Image (cartoon, rainbow, N blue to C red; front, side, top):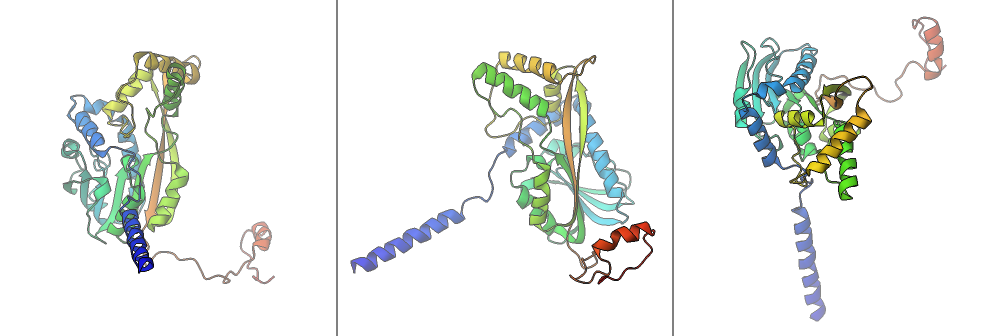
Length: 333
């Protein structure tokens, strides 16, 4: 009887352990989403908010140009994390019939505008809690917003679910080398002054991880590339001020509440010493932009041929190239 009671007690403990494990989140919350929303609200309500649009305007234009490269008309599309409408102001009605804009900031969402004739609908929605119907969208776009998402795999999965078969997802986000000059300068200054370092610049996704995350979400025919925009500033302090104006200041949960004056002055001197170019005023700041394109699988997409159906052997490629690529070689030769 005692053994039976012990077994029952062990089973209860085991079931309780599995139940507690199942309630654990599948991702780590690195960013404070509410803090990021407040930062965007403050930036949008600033009287000179337009002065800080230069970077996101440029990336939004380049991303819209990639949409135009796809020669089809999209009936329904969504801009996830639209900010102040850096993509929608370039999307033409001839390309997209109806565009839904979403963002966490009501003020930024209100300021977003579209091109003449473009039908738009604005929705106050978090990128981590997308609620689009399954198989309802032909196109999903996002520009410089997803790098603040905690559950990026989950976000990709929801986007893929909302797309129709053969729908396309096009996005841009900051890569891991973004602001490496500012990051290293602050770390060196704090290490010298305090004997340790704190995360003053938020972590960014590495390009090598993007492909894996998209494959994990179920996207096919991936295209991923990077671009670097190097912008000059009079000093480190103007860079930090502009980042605040863009609402791109740090939003990590473990960010320090205060940075001492002496640390900032030391970081500015280190920044200039290490990264300033000879015979040029000011300092450069690097922004690495990752562009990605992924397609939801569809019946009309190109499919790989069955294994063993090739008609040309790889060892004969040299002969084919020498004869202009017009010769047909038996695959068994």
